[in-house]
Length: 356
Image: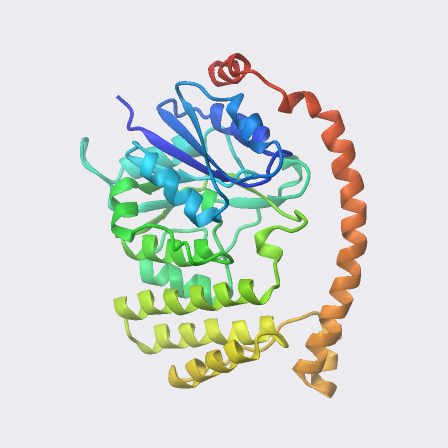
């Protein structure tokens, strides 16, 4: 019998996307799955839409709003699977994503044994339709030893979003639960622990996932002091885990680079946190990271300094983002109107998708 894969979906105000996400799950070619949706106190129709999919395969729970990390931990406590697939309520999986990664992980051990490695896979951003997604290779798209993966990711500021991973349950348990005190970059801190608890990161080139971007008010776009504090705490914790595994010139340098990047990205906000980050950069031996930006930013930096250039850059981005938001909202209204019927489904129809 196939090992059971638990697909864990935290959901908050995702009524526009949750049905599409669940459809991508129910079409998986790996048949032995369970789906656990945890509605995190949504104020819209997310919970009711998810409940229409409820079946022997899909279980839907609700909790007062506590954040995505708490919802994932709730789902983890309910999960019965031998493998864990995290999936945000607005992201999508290719229909054979789980099957491809399961075949890869199981090929690394003898029958009946549990893999000691985790699987990643290619991912791409999209805004309105998965058809927009372009899978452009990145340096992380290969096999890695755990510490090498983190050094590569943090040095080059690369990422692997939660849905790209497939994690054996034993490794998830060794890594521990999500840190519920974190919001922004909680996945970065969590998967640093998961990666370090594994023997290897195996890249499965055929296991695609789709990362929805450009959602107004999404956690990744938040620029509040609380969000910046979470980002700082995530970096500090991740650095602690890495340095505990290997204290060397390369790990100290990449940890310093993490803090230096935080300084550039948050300026002029959270001066106290930036000061703490600067102290860490010095203690860790310094970083040669330079502030990044387009040709205009580089010219302004040369003559005015990076701080003034950063302020001008932020103002330009804010003006462009406001115009983009207005245009995108009109596109979303049209797209939602054309697909409204897809969010009003019955449990029988959900099972029909599963069986088709």
